[in-house]
Length: 93
Image (cartoon, rainbow, N blue to C red; front, side):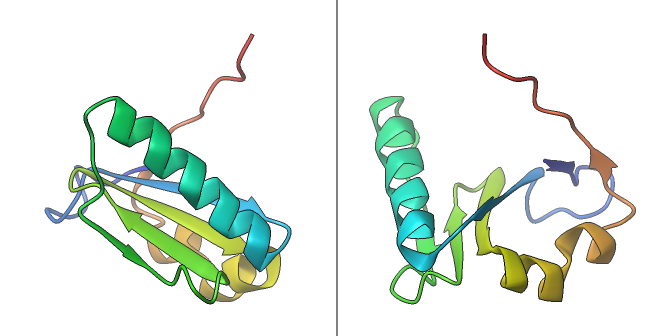
């Protein structure tokens, strides 16, 4: 996760993850969408879902990026946004 609050004003965080296939990326996107909608946080928009190479789900204050490995390496958001702070997500117990 990247903390963008000191870098840009269009969102606060990027959540970046990698799936092993387009179908898995769609499934990850679906589950995030369902869980956040239940929590009262509906998505503003979803891009790239049909292709599944890079699914972007915009929640306003944060944007979820779900990549296939090759696509993530190509776009390298961590390098592009290298001035953002990296936020470690602790593992679930």
